Image (cartoon, rainbow over all chains, first blue to last red; front, side, top):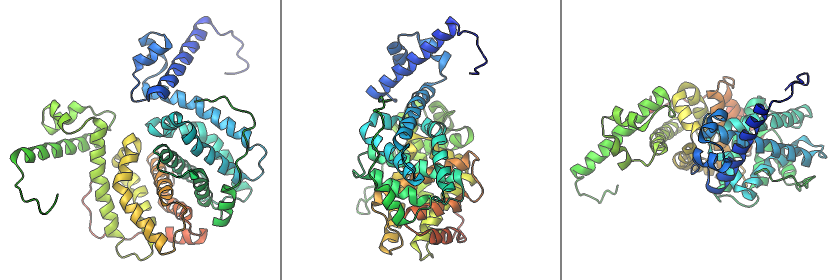
Length: 217
Length: 217
């Protein structure tokens, strides 16, 4: 949206956006209640109280609406992490906090966790929505001489893939309580910190959330 | 199959196994030719020349047969890596070779690579089929004092998740030629090697395949 465009938004556009928002909200509710696999498109349109056909005016497939649900919530989590870490000087600690946040989220909000880790879309959505945050944090650490990586893109993919797998391990109930710390430790080593530095940074107390973010799940 | 069981396999059982093998082989062909998403179950049964209904005597869903195709081929790749690495003394190098093998496979056999990284089943299949190999290699490295990890299960998940994400990056054409070396370098650091050791081990020449494994894709 350009600031130059001053045309008022027409009733049609407004209604269209409302329908889309209703569908996303309905999908989020149903996915959390009964899982993505058990949710059919007609259940989403019923819950949203819109006609079945109008689903396809907004989304190509169930995967597409899963993507939209994730996109919204991932961005909100990214903003929450930004708020939490704004007082932290060490870029390595910022990365540590972000990874620990998501690993812990798999425990505190498993519905959302499953949404993120289970689907094919998750890789692309995670990359699109979290990528910019992760890229910025990594670049800061490299500039500060804290991280040493030969290829930023590969380092982002590897650490993101590790995070999704560890989140899944938490969701499966296969990992210990301190999985967040141990995972952050591994990622920091992967990004070039010495074993001693990685363990020290990963073990620092988590910062408090600045403001209690509305649960975006 | 126990060696003690000497009962002859009945005609019914034999035919059942043949049908299952035909379905898996047909699915493998179609997945490679047109992708998993574009392959319908009736196309698999047509290609296998069996009745549509008999699919469900063997598999619950398309995902189930994707899992079966992957299981077969992942095990074959695991055996190929074992053969390649049997002369290598350093357990860190064995892990490096295994990771590089799969990253390179994403480039040399992208159909198989997509099969592995795209689907929800891939996580469970990769864990079930590759897990035992990976666990054994990790344990060797820990016993030899080469790796230092606080939690073996978490280290396996993190390094496996990193590998799948890097394979996907290769499939997307987003990574450089030497992605295998850079990825192995990161995994070795994650597993506790110093930066210098990790770079040295990851950069060693790949061993030749002992015998040209039949392409299991």
